[in-house]
Amino acid sequence: MALAGLTSELQIYYEKLGTGAPIVFLHPPGMSHLVFKYQRELANDYQTIFPDCRGHGRSSSKDKETFTIWDLADDVASLLDHLLLEEAYICGYSAGGSVAQAFVQKYPHRTKGLILSGGFSQVSTFALKKQFQTGIRLAKNAPALLNRILVSTHSNSVEDRKEMLSYHKQTDPKTCQRFYQESLSFQCTDQLKEWRFPLLFIYGEQAEYMHPYRRIYARNVHPKAKIVLLNKALHQLPIKHYASFNAEIKKFIPCLT
Image (cartoon, rainbow, N blue to C red; front, side, top):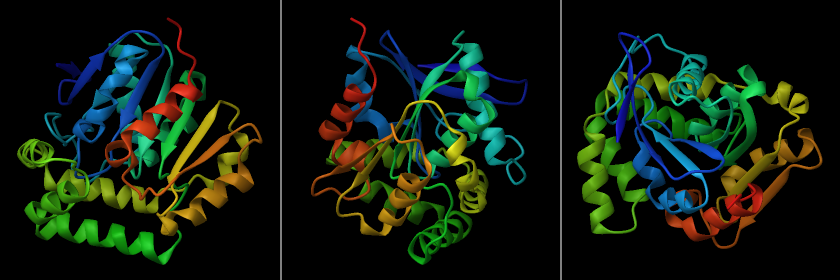
């Protein structure tokens, strides 16, 4: 829909739909705003903002092998500046949640609330470490194969697969690899008790390898935080279980219509 020129070297592609409370949706490495295609219907009630993280989709790359998660969080803040938004709800899916959490850590005054889908405050289990290590290896040595794997697990139809396979070919492999590495090393567990803004954590009931992270949040965040398990669901909630996922967002964020 549009390109935000954040600096002379960096442009972020984004889609902005609807009006109302703004929600920024942040995708994991190797993917793009298309993983949230089924959240476009939320534009009926909210201002929905879907960026491609730097080096992904139509967004340009910068410092491909040296940027940090904090730089990605700064990109989100700069995008809000571009859109003349002082604050927003931030929604991160999977490793996109690392960027979301870095943003709320650095910019709590710009955070209306945080939504994490399959989130983790640090990578501390064997299963998730192996997933990240595999992602890093494939991004370096076989990016086309990584694209096919991610698309096969994040699509509902032939149309989804074709659209994502084609679009994600534009992603820069070195940027994707760095995103994986940065998310693997990111941790904010020690800061969870400091968060005072509204919190929503959504997990798939059958994604058992993610449940240790759900329990970390339950032990550490404020008691008003909402933690939801979607029945008979795995990890890919925004696209595979979008109806229930969207419904939880609507419960969490007031609709001012």
